[in-house]
Length: 97
Image (cartoon, rainbow, N blue to C red):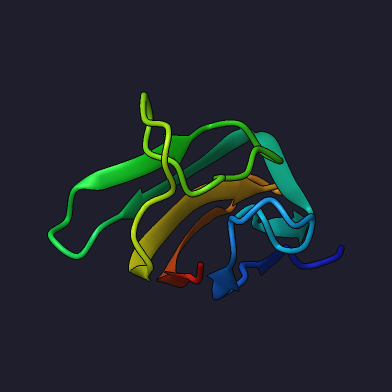
């Protein structure tokens, strides 16, 4: 049976030029019904989160209108593969303006 694969980019540029405008993890053999991702600022505050597989972050805080400052943020993903194995991963994402 195929192993689960997660690809999480380490940089994105939410400047509406049509290239890398979203922070959007991708993968194979991930259960889309059991997925959650959080993005934190340097102080540990949640700046974005979703449980919707395939939904990306546009760099704007919930309720906000402007892209966050250029900086490095921390992400954490918790999900299950199609064989019901739990996966927990974390890393960094840099917002480049």
